[in-house]
Amino acid sequence: MRVALVFEQLLAPVPGGTGRYTAELGAALVRTAQPEDSVTGWTAWHRDRTRASIAGIRGPRRLSLPRRALIAAWERGVGPAPGGADLVHAPTPLFPPTRGRPLVVTIHDTVPWTHPETLTPRGARWHRAMAERAASRADAITVPTHAVAAELAEVLPRIDPGVVHVLGAGVARKLLAEPSQSVVDRIAKRLPGEFLLSLATLEPRKGLDVLVTALARIGDQALPLVVVGQPGWGGIDLNVAARAAGLAPDKVLALGRVGDEELGVILRRATALVAPSRAEGFGLPIAEAMAVGTPVICSDAPALVEVSAGAAVVVPREDADALAEAITALVGDSSARADLGAAGRAAAHRFDWDDVAGRAWALYRTMA
Image (cartoon, rainbow, N blue to C red; front, side, top):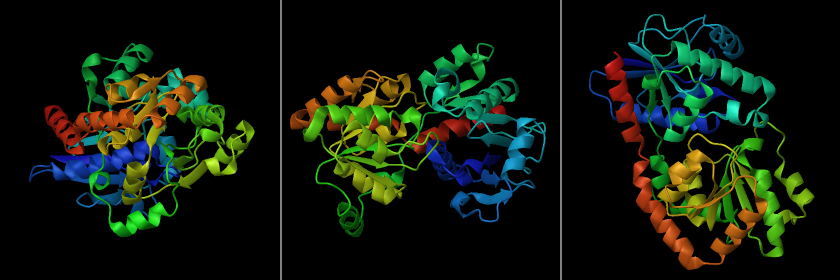
């Protein structure tokens, strides 16, 4: 079977979690393919496609339109489409005309309906419109969690439940591998001795403002916060937010984007991962932290509760006081942290990209 994967998210200014999902799914599809299978990546016309190159995947091949023009065309259901494929999978709601072939579209969350204020107005409208088009045109809609499947049924009541399939998500193999000593030494120099960690694009949906407020309420005893993630929409400036909350300048350290090996070191050295998101479709940072035995505190967003599966401390969304209490209790109890880390490791076997790819191949074959 010849599968075309839309790789445009890998070349977005901020690829984010959906870019990571796209890359990991593509790599896993190659690892789990049969000899007669092939996977080809497709992008808009970019001069440099390096970031969309994945070992074992053909291409990436360029379509005839640059990014903005291609998005505008696909919004209207017209324009160039991947060729030479038996099936097309768009791992985000940006999908091409089908040209008579089966189409799979991944919808990662229902944030454009449930929390539109955490997106730009145009972004919220665009995602709603493309998801609605996908619901009427795609042969299959894949989602990362049962929580998203249930929410889609509410926000898109006309969607056929039979076309929605839960594929899940996984943890990158590079994160699970023991990092080299040179990387450990290099990264350790940039980190506090003990710290809280948040992995998030700097945008309103991630709830980092709630976390900063919680740390301010803990006061001088609060551990430093290390944040790994690129700036996104919404003008979230952690230093400004920290000063406004009354935190000392050394209480927040923003590292930006880091590689998988570096991230593996940071995850292992963290006292706890804190994910106070207002809404998520999966919550990959939680799965990553659990897989390496780092205890997790997360909000009660349904997808985060599903992914953590009882192996995290769960607090109400938007509740800085409850978050501060949870952080204080966990940081002060080494036994609880050890128990939570062990529970996370035990539950993390569910997060395997090859399993995700196996479910995807099975879906593709039923459609073809």
